[in-house]
Amino acid sequence: MSVDPSHAHSHSHAHTPAHPVSAHLRMVIAAILVPFAGAVVGGLIALWPGGVPAHTRTGVGFDQPTREGRVTAVAQLPCAQAAGDGAAADTPETASSGTCLRATVEVISGPDKGSTFPDIVQPGQARRLVPGQRVVLTYAPNAPPGLRYSVSDADRRLPMALLAAVFALAVVAVGRMRGVTALVALVISFAVLSLFILPAILRGDDPLLVAVVGGSAIMLFALYSCHGLNARTSVAVLGTLCSMMLIGLLGSLFIGWTWLTGNTDDETGLVHTLYPGIDTRGLLLAGIIIGSLGVLDDVTVTQTSAVWELKEADPSAGWRRLYGAGMRIGRDHIASVVNTLVMAYAGAALPLLLLFSIARSGIGTVANSEIVAEEIVRTLVGSIGLVASVPVTTLLAALVVCADRRPAEPAHTASVPSHRSGGRRRKPRFGLVQRLVQR
Image (cartoon, rainbow, N blue to C red):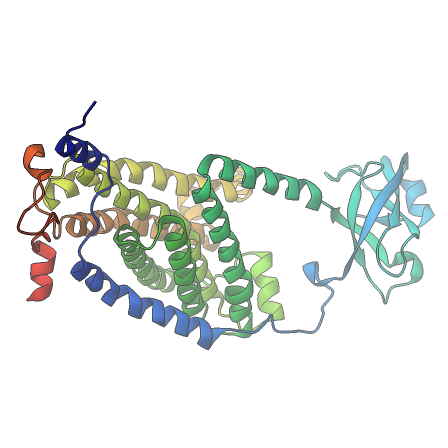
């Protein structure tokens, strides 16, 4: 059975992706993004720390050396007897009444491998030890022989590694090659965070500058590796960049205006003690930018893809119509994302909110305290940046996707080759954006 060539061409054309933008418009986008990418690479080179700066050990918190251990036996006995045995306890003072757990712990790494020591768990302690459990031991080499080791935490590396493997398999099974590229981008993001951002801040560089450079590098690699080197991804990059700049400006303004110091928890205090040169206010602003980056990528990519698909569904739609339709999608996205952000911060600060509830403090008093005001500023500044990213990205996408495309031609004429061009399609006329650029 013969097939009409014109009919076959028309059918295949209807299912092909939207035509890419012209070479001229790609040059316009490149003229904006190439210098930006060059500045990011230059910033990485100029600020590259070359490793975490060394400091004198203080023996506090995570600064202590550790060994691996395993619980070999657990017995219940009166706490007074446990204190008399001289076993290490979880608290400075061992209770004189009640029943304690006396665990025998074996050291399974380091020079004292094979040795054992007793460890006491108080009745009020949430942590429990069971035979066969792997634990992390704190090692104090200058302490007396019987007090050099103590149980500091459970060893969770194996279940966490298995959970990470299940996550990776799920992403690859559903996302296929996109899932693989997403996992690669995730690894690169953690590499930039651990090899560049954290060491550069510890070295004393401006946390805001380090966060902007590192965050921009993560954004460029993640977006282009996952979604391809094309105009659609470039629009998402531009929208994310604009929103990052807005978050940085608002964060800097309101952190100063509300007199936030950024030193509101034990972790920040310990870091400031070990590295007094770190600007804790800049560290707070850097955290706001990095914390908002992942959600920004999601919003900008979604809005850009929505506009591109709307144009594919209706090739005759102009940029105003696409912008209106894209904004209707974006408003639903805003509502869900902002609520997600607020709930995420509230969940992280839930113990703190419980303490204020127990103290029966008023809403004004709670909101005015620095530790809560810091979370409020962090949430609202990030949310404003997310809200602003929707109209900005949608407008850019609508202008770019309509920049040099003519309205759709009827099917019987669109499939007929032009004899003047030897069967090739003529180059579309310049649209609004390119005419503005050429002026």
